[in-house]
Amino acid sequence: YLQRVSLRLRGVTSKVVLVKKRIAEHQRINVATALKIEVEIVGAGMIGRVARLRINDGKDLAFKAFFDPDFVWQHGPWAEIPIGIRLKACQVTKDLPEFLFAGQDWAVWEWIYPHTNPQSRKRGITYEQFAKLEGLTKLNSLNHSNYNPYNMRLDPGGIQKEYWGRRFHDFLQGVVFYSRKAHREGLKSLTLYIKGNTVRYLCLRLVALIFPKLIQTHQASERRQEAGGRRQEEGKVVL
Image (cartoon, rainbow, N blue to C red; front, side, top):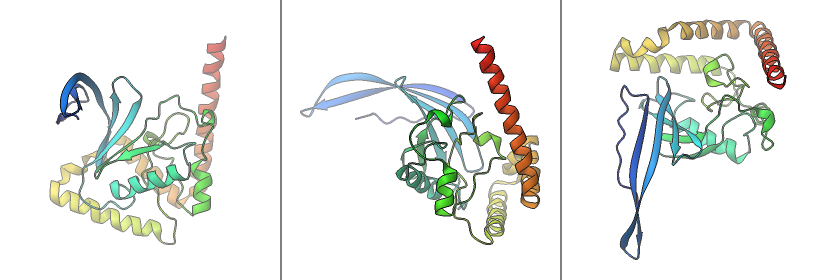
């Protein structure tokens, strides 16, 4: 069994912990080894944090902890954990990270690297294919922080059933959530949404709701430019 370990990461972006692992055989502890755990905070949002987790120099894992107690519609453990299980069961792993395991208020997914390309993943189907069959919402590609350079989604947050009036319903729930948060923690808790990148994203999101075709054309142009840049870099490497 493992000794209890408490990780306090306030103000710290990365930490390496050595944990003594004791193995009991026939009710006697006769083996002692060390368990190396590397933790690096890579992202923070309104309801939790995401860390890169590595155990004994193995594969990187995406560890997501949920902190906010309020209901946050399609985000949080009550949504992302069952969605992750469902997507894995249906083999939707072509352009989404594979769900691994979870607890009550945390979950672990496959870590998506910047060089991870959906074309190199032979198994599974894309989320777009699955969404058409199940009547689910499209992924929000405007939030670039949720994607790697090859448009691999980094987490399944925001997925839900598509229905008439959904956006208005989400808007009302969002107003209630942020109002409660500001009342409980003060207006400083909303400073994350006053940053330049966030304001730009919210403006693009508003334009996308009013003129969806205009945003789709802009995104297609950006993808072509990114693809052309990658081909040029690959050509330089070959030369």
